[in-house]
Image (cartoon, rainbow, N blue to C red; front, side, top):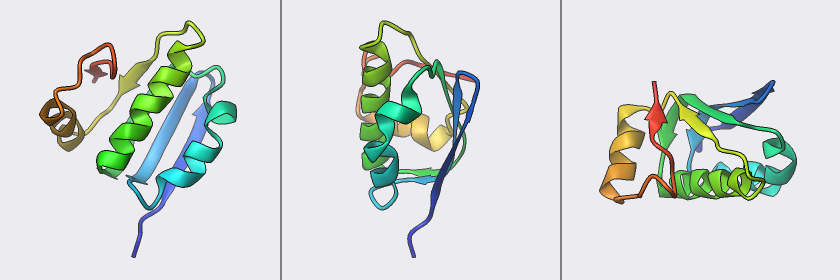
Length: 100
């Protein structure tokens, strides 16, 4: 059974919770422009699982914010997510380093 992805805006922070994977990225992708408007921080501490589709979505969300000439910070990434991004050898200009 597929997990669920939830998100909540709090000022300029978007909190993601649940599973960010191929089964759950669709709704966030479809609403990304509205959801990401004004966001400067992605808080990932509530994510229990992230797969390659989730990493791809994060890359696109970061790119969307940067096209608005805004830098974005990623917070609370799990060790597993950090390992996955290192395995892909993603440079920081594509996906910024994770903060605490």
